Length: 277
Image (cartoon, rainbow, N blue to C red; front, side, top):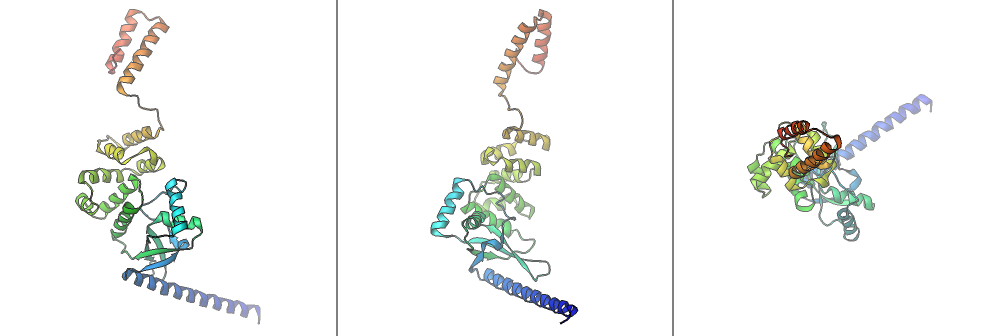
């Protein structure tokens, strides 16, 4: 067979393999969609599940809780199925499997070398808020989300047409709390990224208290968050601040041999800015 003939034959085989592969993928997605419709639990390869789109954005695999989860799965297996979205591509002839809830369980299985995991499948329309709703419900019930994850989830629901009343009823939460935490989820990206970088610095209570304040600008809010994270000089309580200034003032008088007039002028300046000398 000539070189040209061999090249033509190789191209034909390649095209055939592609058709067979696409056909297999289409059959597979049809089976997954049927399983989703019938609410059947299936076994999925953990390496085929994408973890990058979900309410749970960060998983610290060094935390004792994650290590406990790994030990539990190693001895008992995954008891509660994870929730996975079956999402077709634009042409409809291929698909992706995207984790909605159960990121830690999936990651733990990967770490342990476990190939298969039980999953419940869902198919969502492109404009459906159900994906966010299910992610929040599953994670709030079974996995310890940081408040910023919850805040962004609630904010996503608001962007999709929900209001504070809807969210409060759905998740059995106080309406005032929901309103405050939604504000957090709507903060500038820079502010939210700062909280994600230092999650241990922020509790649910602290974020709600910060959200209650009326900030003159986004920069003022970010300055406050920076202060909490220790990225700027620490705030000195008002009484300590005045005491500190008074001591410095006295030392400055002695060290520089100020006259009485100079002392009085300096004292007036300090009082003008609210310090008792």
